[in-house]
Image (cartoon, rainbow, N blue to C red):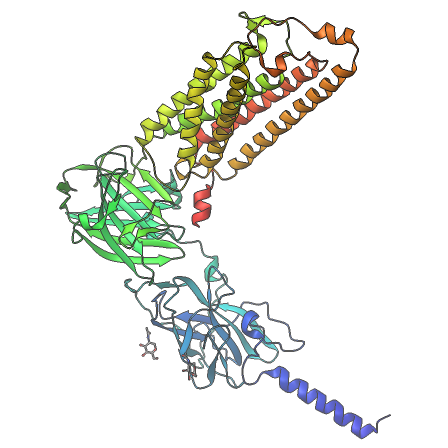
Length: 635
Ligand SMILES: *[C@@H]1O[C@H](CO)[C@@H](O)[C@H](O)[C@H]1NC(C)=O
Ligand SMILES: *[C@@H]1O[C@H](CO)[C@@H](O)[C@H](O)[C@H]1NC(C)=O
């Protein structure tokens, strides 16, 4: 046992050491970088509204520019600051610390948490009045930030998450205004004012400037449909006319590489005068004009368009929203075409994409594309209506009906039901064959009409990365030749009949699979505006169709084994005469005892498939019903 005196000495030393290492008299410990917790042992964070606030010298700061950040107490209620830790955090990723402090008061010092000098903390614990720091915005970041601090009044009393209002880091081209922070700088005797109850973040999001006036002073046009009222367009153009000054605004969301608007004489891409708002790799935003070519190289060309017909007024990239505001000359000539904004009517087009084709050409409009349905005077006010999608929607509906419906059913009939109605006929043919032919003629007709509809809609070939057009065309070709082959089929029993059977099976199934693949690809097609969840309905169809194949194959196998094992009497009874020219390997086999079950399966299959088709056609007709894949990928 230790002598009493020595024992006390050790306890005091431990307490002292613990006290020394937990007080953080000279700044926040390194562990506080991420959570801003002071690690004062046994001390709880205050849950009351903090008596401190952080204000900045502006709500916007250009990349690389310096912002004054003041931490203090609300006017009239001076509360001294003991210790603190202060950082700028990204709004979209609150764990990310941004920028660096370049000038701090002598009672404080900068430390490095994730980037050099990105954090400032106290040097000593004595009471301090309000302090102003100079913070430099990074030159490789655009978007919203806020300053966040933990502030301690004393060792035992501290508040977390003292936050500044939102600050936007904007491009160098943007004009920013500054304001002075109304913060108490010294002791004062005035009674304390009412302390802010809600944090600035809780305030409703202000609507983007591009939508302001869409109801009464500007012509606005955006994609997807009805996005202007909700102020949530993927791409939007707004035109404000004052006298003979035509001011355009374009904005694209989802962090696009470019957003562009075009003046067109029709509602199709090509021979249009485009205005591109482009986000450059260095964070700057540039404005260009260009000329578009209908579905031919070079598609879009800046060198074919005079650049001086537009003047950029403002630009920004904030929270993934690329925005340009510019003036366009009332009269300009591009590629020999005179664009007179005051006298002529134009279709408006708005597009956005996430890539460049090369340094001077924008890439495919992978995020958004829309054109107005009719030419408009640009001085019109209100939201413009998009071009009709009726051909597109009919195309989708016809193809769904053909490839999920009639083709699936027709193929099942030919594969598993040749013997089910053995002996019965319809119009001189076996029942399965009569229905197979009706269903397949239906598939053929729906496909051909659907194909003509889409040709009329797109007027030629559409580009893009999605292979829907290619798989679709191959499906149409296979579908087209299938009945020709069937018409010239060799007679059953002749030596070429098995070749026909094989080829007919192959072409039919290949077309069916490609048709369904094309329908899946359509979900990923920006133009179709299908909600991403519609892919699950299609997957459910495929699963159901495959299960039906497996079940029917199983009954066929069982039936086959059964009929081999059964004595002649039963087998003979089922061997009804078949005069139809059906032929094929199956036709010579005896019918089996599963006809009733198979008819039941057919009775289950047909209505469920019909339900799926009705659901899909509804989604196509009412599109857009939800977030599409292109918007998810673009975000
Ligand atoms: C920031 O503070 C410095 C020094 O206090 C001052 O010179 C400068 O004008 C301030 N900047 C702004 C934008 O208020
Ligand atoms: C970080 O801060 C220290 C101390 O103020 C200073 O000497 C140093 O130059 C700063 N580094 C950068 C990269 O700003």
